Image (cartoon, rainbow, N blue to C red; front, side, top):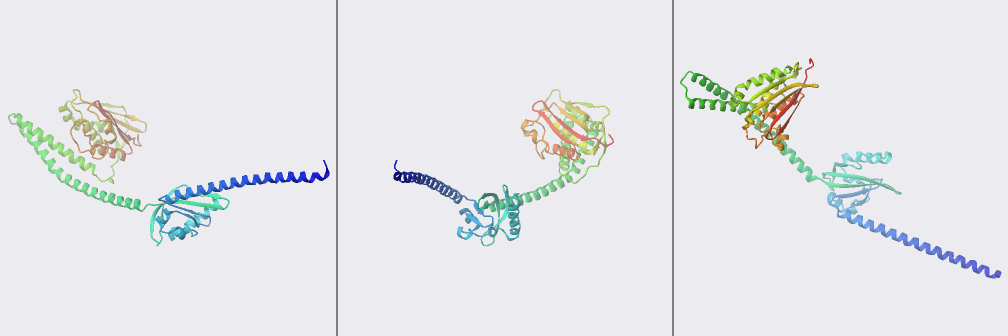
Length: 407
């Protein structure tokens, strides 16, 4: 090879290298243009979604100035995009909250510990013109080489707030009307109770007087029916009064022997259960500890459960009520079981609700207050009451009462 040919070959190699580099640059530029187009497409898609959103979408930079403003923001706050971009976001915040907002932004930028970020908060917004309104804010943050940015999705909840206020107002009105109605019922029941008791007493006296007279089946039947009807009305009025008794009435506490209390309640219904052929069995554990409570109120619980069992015994050929009392850890457990018609499963969770009555019980109707009264009394003593039942096979009521300290 001649020496004069060497420069030409070197030049050709350099040209080839330059061509390859140009091709590489063209490829890189094509990729860059493709990436830029992708970014433009993404931005177009984001803007399209953001602008079509009903909620306001507002982005700010680290200096707390607006850098993005969608149509929803314009609709909610009243500022156009031209009016909002570049402005401090505090134009959307009531003045009394602006200082706390700025302190929160500075705290996040220095500590990176979020307070509102990632949560949904109910706050107050400020429309163009200075009118405040309730908003729901969801705040997020993102970082680039240019710094930290914030984006808030804001919803106008004025309608929700007004509905909530109206609901609270209606609830308060209903509470007041309920209180007035309960006061009226209590007054009427109280005024009726005395004459009913007098009427029942007079009928009983008349029955006693008639025992010395010649037998008259029709007369005795009428007197029996009058007595039962009077007693039913008397019990009904007493349940109403007990169910509407003010919550602040505190029971009188003392040591109570549950076996004695049960015997007293059962003896009260001796005549009734004898007439209906109901067998009552008592199973009292020996050396029962005393409970700490109001004996009158505890008897009321037992009475209400017994009345419930008697009313819903049905047409059983062998009606039976079993009452068991035994020691149960830190409490005394009382179990009252019957073999009556039972409670449908769908009603079992509601029987302690006030005024609730089982629609298809097949028994006598009550006020729907007896079991709710029992629950209120037991819980006021620090105990628990519940029921187990199988339709057609009977019901068991169980309640616990804490032992007295002496026990």
